[in-house]
Image (cartoon, rainbow, N blue to C red):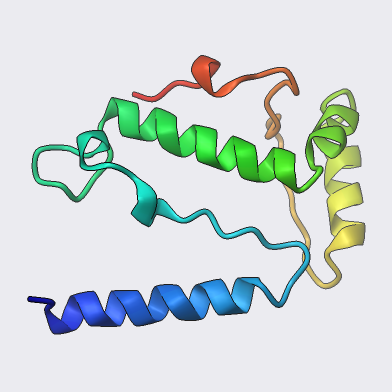
Length: 115
């Protein structure tokens, strides 16, 4: 039997999905499709294989949005140039960082740390 919390989570997820479909620049990565074997014993958190699976799902979503070309273009820029480009695409939002925030465009999910 479903608890009131499970019902609330289900309703919230449905609202997020509906909301994400209203924007071209948003992709919802659904984690509910993750198999039980990808979770820790308690079933709440991802284990190492689950984290790798999650990274793969995010990578697929990014590739599906045509973002890999943007990542490749920005990876050779300085941080400020990349942030300036992002700021132009996101009115009213200022992003700042002194560290390289983009992985090389050839990084596959297998190469990501899942610790």
